[in-house]
Image (cartoon, rainbow, N blue to C red; front, side):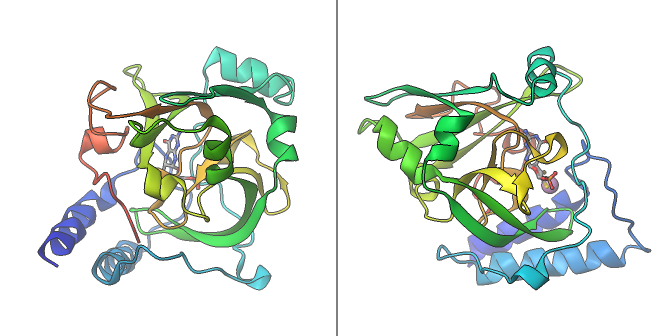
Length: 246
Ligand SMILES: Nc1nc2c(c(=O)[nH]1)N[C@H]1C(S)=C(S)[C@@H](COP(=O)(O)O)O[C@H]1N2
Ligand SMILES: [Mo]
């Protein structure tokens, strides 16, 4: 409980975060952020390692906002985007017995999970959307993690003004959760670049900063101490909690 309270207060102070994004939702006199912090407190206090709630078609946020506006300017990403991502390849390697590289059609050929879930940003906004894609567990089963593998690291195409790349990580338990997916579609259409095309991670059991967009490469590791700031993610390196369960 003590730890949860600590998590709650550190998340509340992080409410002004995610400011790499231009937030398209207006904040009417702080009410939104007040509601947001109450919601985050609630999540942090109630907490669950069970399943995230599923929603109905009629709950889908319409129109569905563009939350993160910074479609990567990375030249490689722009080249892929220009060809409708036909040349996209996703390597899954590191501490695995069977490293593989997947094209989009190979990913689409795997059985998909289609779920309507809520995406909660620490800034206090939420959206409900239908994400469809491959359960990460299926991919892990294909590459066969070695016993030493503890974390799954997701590297993105976007980078900061100072050049640091976005990345994130999950432990194998969360990675293999049946609701954790590599999403390919949003609300019945292929993901658009603003929402993480062609492949974005969706982790409905955790806050949205764990749902890495524009996934470029996946690596299984024993520790992330040697990666970037060593805290397991772009936001974690900047003070956010690594475990962001809701
Ligand atoms: N690659 C990458 N993934 C990312 C981010 C980012 O900056 N880069 N931001 C995260 C945060 S803070 C949020 S709230 C969600 C926003 O996802 P959306 O733009 O699809 O709503 O993406 C997450 N995944
Ligand atoms: Mo966020």
